[in-house]
Image 1 (cartoon, helix red, strand yellow):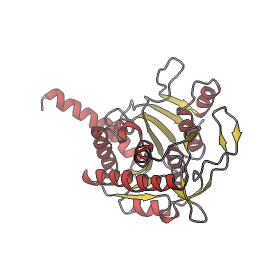
Image 2 (cartoon, rainbow, N blue to C red):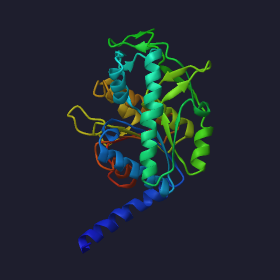
Image 3 (cartoon, rainbow, N blue to C red):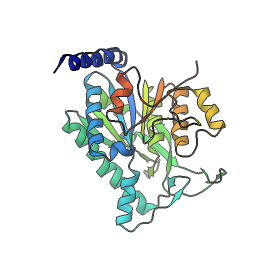
Image 4 (cartoon, rainbow, N blue to C red):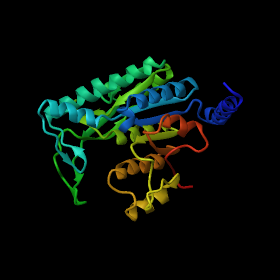
Length: 295
């Protein structure tokens, strides 16, 4: 290693030190999705980032999606995918596939990847330990923007997050990996949006950070430039002006709920950037958009 490389390495480490000190012992909830779940190099980068976070004293909790993997298996089984306002209509057959893919295939792949890189990950669904109590989603905003009662099957909304199982795992040096499947009072399984699950878990744990990995650089302004820092009021203004819309809107609404409920900050970051998680948490510049509560 030459002198310049040594100096750069030292700079990176010293820049990270105050953030390691700041977040030591704190909980960070991460929604893992997008390209970071598909590209092999990005998957390995993500696993190493999570292991490093745990080793320096941060408690990462991962909530993952799996929409493309669900669609792929449904297609192979000849089951047609139907959506209402971006939500998958989940009948009994589709719910079986959702549970197989999210609770089995995807969840265990993430667990294996993190464990391969030296972590101690444990995969669970929201049904384990009654983590995510849910009920059937009774109404839905249509594509025309009206609120209607539409039966979209076993799609749920969270009524309660019981954090006992998460606190037990993190206290024992494990990294929880959560598949977004909830359980109703009658034992019924519910498919729940992973962004919403991540937000509600962060709220229940009073997490220091909620990080949402996406396939965009962050929240963009009207000129498509990334906005690095926003208050709750800023975000609400951008929604009102129609600057934040479509696919970003559910993520932003999740972020607003989180910062209004005690989560200190929410980061919406580009999961296509190598080591995006480390860059966001341990560097001065960060990546993506940070949302903070007003005041």
